[in-house]
Image (cartoon, rainbow, N blue to C red):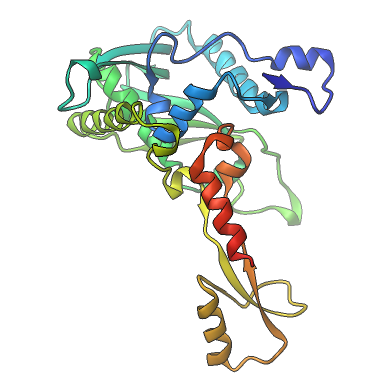
Length: 304
């Protein structure tokens, strides 16, 4: 169910309506869902018909799909490439019985048959430039590479073709030397040996299959990385200062810092709540998540 709280014009409203397309299709899991939190994946499956989102939440999905469509149109006629393909496998976790078989689909964007390079298109911010990329990019590429190699296509390299959607040309005295000169970049990663790819894939499959039998409240918890967590801190600051003098993990540590440094009464301690960015801003199933609710309660108590 979708709302239009920003009152988008009718043409935009129609364009942003989710299309009747599912990367999983008739499968149980996709490579993308396998690398995600089992708690999130199961809650989404169970409550997807109850979720209410705004159409603007679809903007980044729509924009990414538009980029994929243009790249597919431009490259699909070149015989050296395999473009926008799906590979489906019927597998079970290591040690699982017949009931644990699941249909898993991996969808890859581009495979260069000459260089044996598997790559994906990603739209992101220009401030990703200079970073080492995202862990989920590497994990997804390695599962896709495993599927592709099992189909008879060897994979020597994996890469992300990143397109910086917020890129702007720079000039003059405001030019940032760390800012990219171009609106795109290739992030290359190490492809794992085939045995390691298979082991990682089967382990992720095991975690998700086991989560299927758990009630909502008993699902395995999301990790701090899966929550995009920034922990709560106690800030020692001087009244009127723009920045904290010291960030501490506990109130006791902050008080001890003030005593040890013999700071005057103009120094105070302020509790700064932690943040789980994905949970707060990007998770459509948090209302059914007892882990999120418990965390919110703990944050409220910490501020008292």
